Amino acid sequence: MSQQHHKQCDVLIIGAGPAGLSLARGLAPSGLSIVLVETHPESVLANPPYDGREIALTHYSRETMQAWDMWDKVPANEIYRLKDARVLNGRSNYQLHFPQPTAARGKPADSLGFLISNHNIRRAAYEAVKPFANVTLMCEHNAVAVQTTSNQATVTLDNGSQITCQLLVAADSRFSQTRRLLGIAADSHDFGRTVLVFRMRHTLSNNHSAFECFHYGRTLALLPLESNLTNCVVTIDNDKATALMAMNGEELAADITRELNGRLGDMTLVSSIHHYPLVGVHAQAFYGQRSALIGDAAVGMHPVTAHGFNLGLASAKILSELVTQAAQQHRDIGSNSLLAQYQRRHMPHTRMLYHGTNAMVTLFTNDAPPARLLRSLVLRASNHCPPVKRLISKQLTG
Ligand SMILES: Cc1cc2nc3c(=O)[nH]c(=O)nc-3n(C[C@H](O)[C@H](O)[C@H](O)COP(=O)(O)OP(=O)(O)OC[C@H]3O[C@@H](n4cnc5c(N)ncnc54)[C@H](O)[C@@H]3O)c2cc1C
Image: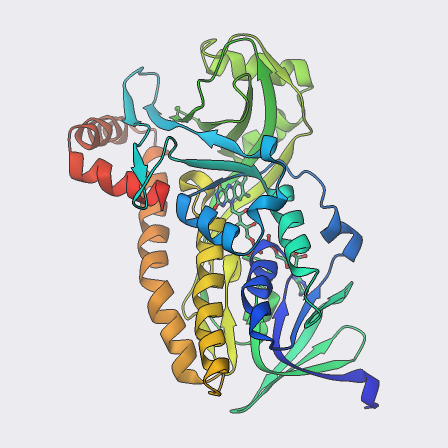
């Protein structure tokens, strides 16, 4: 193979989604040479389209994004405050309430967290990476083969060129091709459901409260943006999703208004509708020889508990700190011991959240009479158990 078809770098990241770009930004000050391979053209990374996702971010994620110059790159009027959260079950008006906190991460706080559109996070991450000359973007390419030895990893791209690195990182989504090529197994759970996301304007204020309504037959989450603008997240069985997706704006607004018993007044659809399959994935290992998994490639969460990107950012932070430290101390940045340390620091938390979320979703989407009763009891018990509420609030704020 000719010289220009064989590139060398220190860290090769497959996937320039929010997790891959965040890792590149976290690593960039180390001076290591970093290559990001991404399927999409660079114009899409620079100006990602609206995709319906509003990402609920913890205070901890905000700190990380601030440290990596990503937070300030999001327009201030498009960072929305998530004051408090309420959970409802079935047709009952009883609410499990997670109140507005007075402090988070040792500082005064007036919100549980923040909401930022996914396309704004992606653009901010791209802009934060761009100024670094040691980060190279190779867009419109796919990784098609991977080979690892004890001292390097080599990736073959779809144009036949190869890149050799000390550390290979898979950040190519929950359906990660790189994870498969590395032979790292993953547990996956297909919920048999689809999630639909869209924005509605409404005549009554949402008071900046988030709602998770576990209605019978479908789940509806309301994420407050402006006081009269809310992101609606409907999860519904796949066979019923088609009918909902076929509705025009007026029909959908009427459907959601009915579902909410008019809680937000008259509603109007003001965005395009986006849909995603509900499949949760947890890799059995977060590293292999000369390789690591981050973001959704490591753990792809059900969105109901809003942990996905928060965990992706945490994975990028942990790995970038370990790699930067090793580089500063002239140690091997892709050693087994370093990667095992990454897994030890990240996996226990993700396992607990992944299985906890799946168990909760399984219960709260089961409409059989005994499950309905248990759902109601769980809500009431949680409301009257301060340690449980504190634990969940802490997960929400980070
Ligand atoms: C409806 C919905 C709501 C959500 N809400 C929240 C929330 O409130 N809070 C939260 O924290 N998270 C939330 N999430 C999760 C969050 O969106 C994801 O965790 C996050 O986008 C994952 O980022 P990622 O970079 O790991 O993967 P992705 O965003 O999937 O990016 C992967 C990138 O890899 C590229 N790629 C794929 N294959 C290849 C290849 N072979 N070669 C090169 N490039 C490749 C893709 O083009 C893409 O750019 C939500 C998700 C959904 C669907």
